[in-house]
Length: 144
Image 1 (cartoon, rainbow, N blue to C red):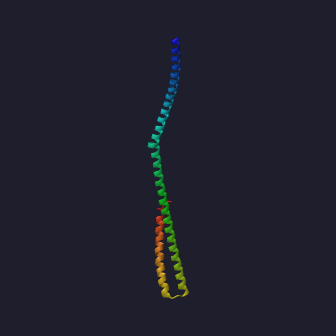
Image 2: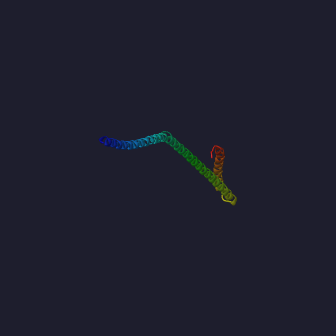
Image 3: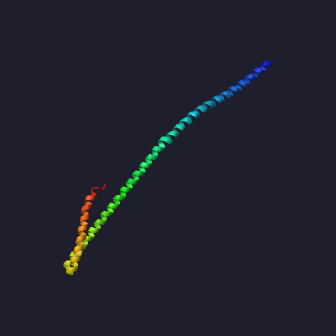
């Protein structure tokens, strides 16, 4: 009966080894699954590093350049509008000065003073009118 106990112990050891083997095989399957997930993650990381991130950075650079260009255009338009307003103000001031000189001349203020002012205003008006003509030609080049 010594052989029966040995066979029984062998059966128990076989059961223990079988349980350990099942556990090892389940761990091995989990490792394979984990390895596949790791490979997929590495491919995604590489795609992000070498494709997606550089593409996004180039898009950001492009957007920055476009915004800078829009800002320059807006600044140019602002300066153009300010210049136009300034020319209109000079033209209006010249016209008012001419009208005032004519009114003074008609009112009988000394002829000598009236002539000097009229000549100065006329030269200013001619200058302003000449700029107005050039302005109309230049406005054709403005991009809005």
